[in-house]
Length: 282
Image (cartoon, rainbow, N blue to C red; front, side):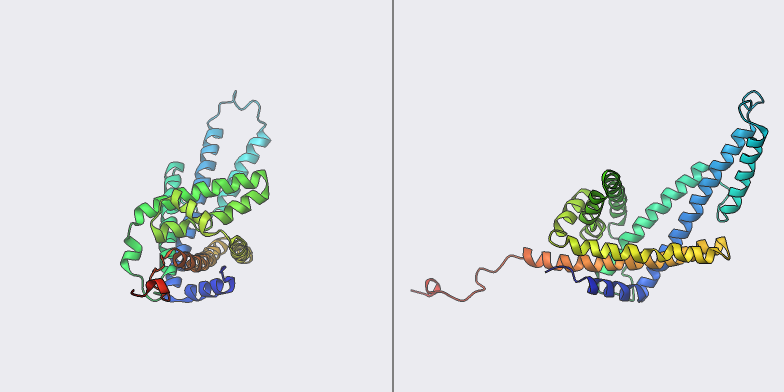
């Protein structure tokens, strides 16, 4: 039995619209906004360091640079500052550290989202869903994501098809980590196994979610015509909602496969059958 794509998408939408889904969407949106803030802050810090380095050059060191080129560089740096309205004044090191912290929070949120969407509860979040082995699961999810995306990017650079195949094979790594408490190596191996025979359906679900995710940059572009800051905030809000929907739909598809997989692994009772002549007392 393969994945029912329509059912996975419908359940994903209904779970996202429920109370738990909306809470997760808000958290995802907050994480997305913080990510934008610290990316812009890091970029601004690097630009400021470049300007300071340029201004600190001696006349001899500036001999290869015309006054026009120097003035153009300074002007572009000022224009860049206007293009990053959410940037905070901080050092590049602090901004990079904050980005890493937010990335770990994002992974923890994704782990919790998978656990919530795999269960039946839609109106309240059990505390153990959030806290149970969350640190180890987050670290495994974070490292696993880096490895999987590294393989996908490498495969895509060689040829597009290997990258797509790897994306399908490792599509359920986070679900294996979040729900089954596996390390990232076991999760990669079991994602490979559980997708066997259903890889076309997994690809189609992933394709639909990628198409739907394009609503985020479209929203940013439309609102950004009026306000750059508004476009960034609007993009984060829509992105949070889409992140919750993506996690819900993928997890509901995984639940379908996991139910079948569990049923196939259950040992059959040797006595659960009709009696034959050899079973009758002599």
